[in-house]
Picture 1 (cartoon, rainbow, N blue to C red):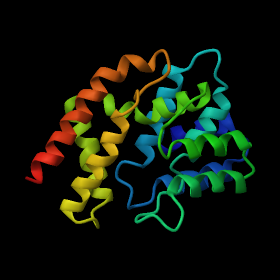
Picture 2 (picture 1 turned 90 degrees about the vertical axis):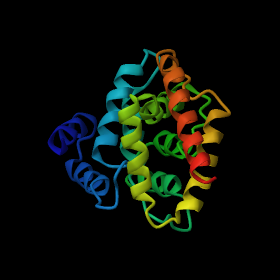
Picture 3 (picture 1 turned 90 degrees about the horizontal axis):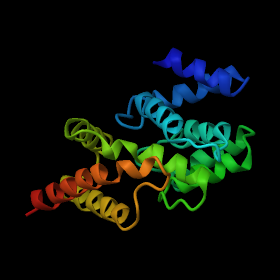
Picture 4 (picture 1 turned 45 degrees about the vertical axis):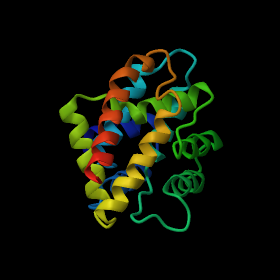
Length: 195
């Protein structure tokens, strides 16, 4: 997978060492969901959901950076902000950093942000088995959070996602029903487990 991703990076950017450094970040041992398979899945979904209006180079670059910094527990700034700052430090266009920042709450309001956020959230629309594996990977990443606190926090995050459309691109909207079913089921499980 790493070789395939590196080839994708080469097609996107001439600085191979930069791609190698990003892949090293995505390969950190504490990552269970926010790892190379997630990056690959987001890049694949960008291609599936894209329309002529999208500047794919910018959105793909933002995908590479959107979870490039994933410190657990997060530092004094959010991981999204740290990732955006990394993109800026690496000389990426300002639009890339802007898109990365939007992934903090997925409240997209323009075509490029909609495409990146839809690709990032596509995991929510997986099969029941795939979704369960995703949820378990998130829990493993947050192993240091006590169970009751994790359930409450995770339920709150998921509930906030449901307060808006999950998908905004034309093709992404087809994922909405499956994603809402999965997220609603996880919330019920999280809340039910605490009673």
